[in-house]
Length: 443
Ligand code: SUG
Image (tube, rainbow, N blue to C red; front, side, top):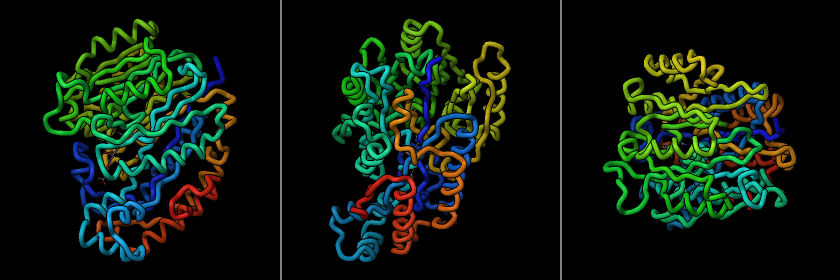
């Protein structure tokens, strides 16, 4: 067994976490629009999951929240004056823009970037491309800070290659690792890279109701940039019916780890081609498809079963990390129990987490994490301060309790004190994690 590991980098939930109904096609976001949020609870729920994975012996890192509300973009859109004046005018003239500038959406780091491990890339380096998140304004403002955070976390050019985000245009929409799955026998061995898109060629079917956020053209560009072996890449189209049922990212309907792919039978337009490709290149692989009769697309979307994380502990045991909503859903929970009871099943057990604050915006366990496969040398080259151990957990817990509010409603987003509180919190965080001057307000 190689010493190469798959690390999870979870996004810390930012101090402005709120429900603004910004993500069209994400049913949970629409359902909870304008209900009160609890940023403190959200951040603590995320930290508890990170700590539990670190306690399992996994490499667990953190990625920082972004500066919100994002004043530089409000100014770019013509609001002027002091920060308080900008917030006030935006809240009167364009409350939707203010809400977009205040979202804590960078917490969902599965959308931060697409990451290809060095074993898959022709130059033997680990490649990152921040996602352009072109479909929604509140997310399209993320890539610049994401790129800085990734460079501050993975600084060494001898190991890490950081590409620019793809041009942010609908034809190149890219939502990052949420639409990318790697399958392998061992993390250190060359893997298969599965790219999933919603929007392909003109003659391919399109969803009728909701946007297809990921494009095939973006996936192909990522594979080229990351210098992947074309034979070991596959581009699969998401079923338009799945997108219209609320599957806005592939990680809402499929999850893979090592040589296991767990997905819904209605996830793709051509599931047979996908399975054939997987089994041709990785004969040991198992593709477990859950039938519509057992868990419907609608049940998959409301429980986030497939947004579970499949992780391999250092002893080799594979765990399924799910949101509490799965346990509360009798048919979904029965499906998990059936999978676990199957003697051929590779999953050792299930761990359940309360991530309700993030779930209400359509962000489950897997949305909150970016997977980065690291060799021993690459792991040693990561900014050491970002690894979550007991000490960092305690410091971050105290930091959240000191700075975060326990209630936010849309009207609070224009409060200049919220901006000040957030900046104070983030300023302290960049020192704690040794990230340098990450934010515009620090530059
Ligand atoms: O882009 N929700 C996010 C959820 C992202 C989940 N990520 C993955 N599946 N990997 C989105 O739809 C809602 C924000 C609001 O409505 O306030 C939001 O952006």
